[in-house]
Structure formats: C-alpha cells, structure tokens
Length: 106
Image 1 (cartoon, rainbow, N blue to C red):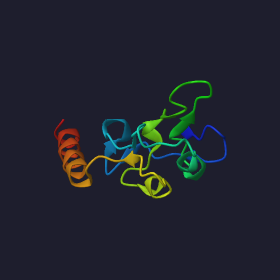
Image 2: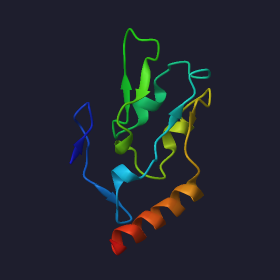
Image 3: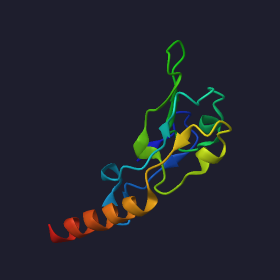
C-alpha cells in the first residue's frame, strides 16, 4: 500500500486492469523549458507523484510515478504553461492488454 508523502491519502491499487502498476509507464513528463515552478500540479495531485526539491535546479520532479492513477491527466490541466505531458493513451492501453495476456499465459 502506498501513502502520499504528506500523509493524508493512501492509494491501495497495486494493479490496473489486472497488470501490476509498476509495469505500466504512466506518469507526467515535465518540460523544464516551460515549467515556471508554480507547483499547482503538486498542490492538486492527491497521490503524491510529485516531489519538491528545494535548492536544486529542477525544483519539481516526478519522484513517485507509480503513484499516478493510470489515465489520469488532471494535473496537466492545472498547469498554466502547459509543461506536463503524458504517454499516448492508446499506446498505453495496447501495452496493458499485451501485459495482461502475458500475465494470464504465464
């Protein structure tokens, strides 16, 4: 079971559609050329995917990608400079289907 770094929300989903969550590459990528470090995405995300790093050049990172809810992209909607992007949903769904078949076969 995973816990939000701030301690107020726990996420218990270890699988998604029958596939271990760690095998699904779904989390935001931060475009540091666009990011203005407003931290709106971190403030919004209740799953603790982001981590602030004071005193470093990249003050915001996706430190816990496994905490992202697969197919959620709401944090990107909070981003004024449009600095967050996600993997292609269709490609990710196809990967999940293949992984699920492999898990069942194997």
